[in-house]
Length: 293
Image 1 (cartoon, helix red, strand yellow):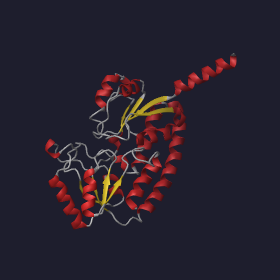
Image 2 (cartoon, helix red, strand yellow):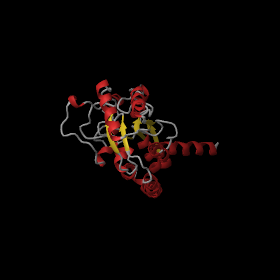
Image 3 (tube, rainbow, N blue to C red):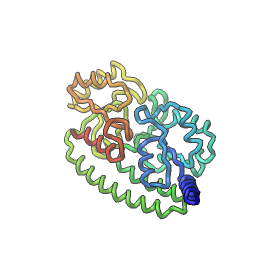
Image 4 (cartoon, helix red, strand yellow):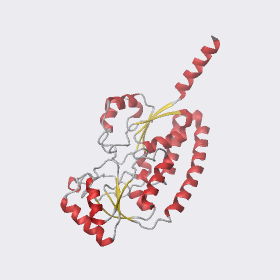
């Protein structure tokens, strides 16, 4: 009986010591787990199979937020369409903007493509810049360091563990990046078009040139006129690669490919959004595989 009581006490302490963390997307969740290890309980809010801009605000997400000690969001306006009402409904003061348990990762990243002006005439643009920075594998290093600092602040008694986990992860990721850089340096055809400007950070990192988007404006469905112009542009510049995400319609990309003899490549936008992208390394490997082959 004493052993049973002791076991219950130990399990209770383990559960109590675990920091409950919600992240908005899987890449953030995976990095958080690497740094937090057994000291954290990480839950991801967004389903990677769907458009990251528009996540259905299910009651189960409210429950997760209600019990969280820390919320880590992508920021840059990416969650603007779904997270604020969930936060309001959860009514958890620990993770509200400005609280110690709130972390907007975009505040630590230099965002690309910041518009000079904001207007609905330019489509569904993000005022702070392109929010899809996690597509650059080098931002993983920044994200890991920021998360470590936040965990050290919230759970100072385990600072040594977080620092150790961070050190080990940075060493591992540095090796991974060297291998990825070497691999990407061998890629020859670096001309692409995209459906939506999801991949700008990865493309810039490895010196790809995007000649246009299937969307005439961000968030606007492609028109016949824009599609014809894009086909002409691709033929003129001999662009043979179309980057298609997993959640937009694929009929337009297929039509363009048929007219230009280009290849449509389904690229993941988050861990788990397509097959063979189920962890951090496989996520970026999948992108590299699709772009280089």
